[in-house]
Length: 101
Image (cartoon, rainbow, N blue to C red):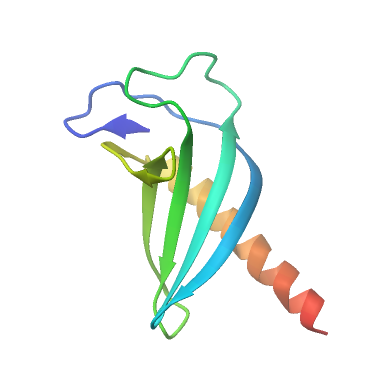
């Protein structure tokens, strides 16, 4: 993760702990909770990181937004962190398909 302006940069190894799905109009919001395995002390301004993944009405992932304490924050995810999140989202989709059968 990094703060706008590339300050406080670190590459997190995310350990996913859960998710919550909410439909908001045509948007599907997936709130993702995780722990960061390779960071003992979070940088200043980041205390409880999480993610929000936003899908459009066609089921296409539109954006992955960094949250802190449940709201948007000044941090962004690195490309490698986004890959981890996307992979986790794919496993959620597979899990939901299995539960529907």
